[in-house]
Image 1 (cartoon, rainbow, N blue to C red):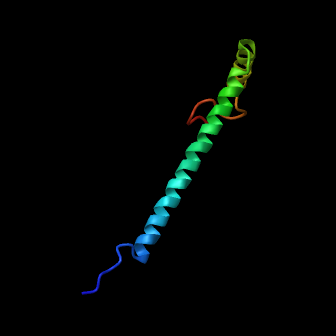
Image 2 (image 1 turned 135 degrees about the vertical axis):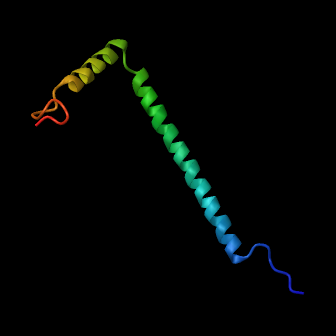
Image 3 (image 1 turned 90 degrees about the vertical axis):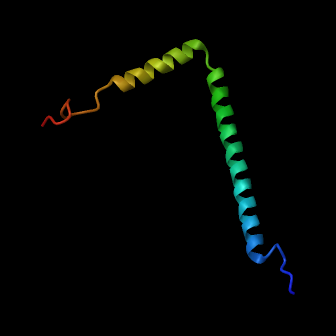
Length: 76
């Protein structure tokens, strides 16, 4: 009787693909952590007055009218 190698070519490709996905996943998690750390450093580097001023500017931008056109949906 002929014995088959448990690690056939198909199995090796599958293992390689799974390892590649695992490495890509770890790289994605590491990149996300770097972005979160950078954002946290930026926020903690601001004084409370700077944060308040930034929020006021963002609120003023959000409160501005979007432009010409009907104020209500369905109005012509």
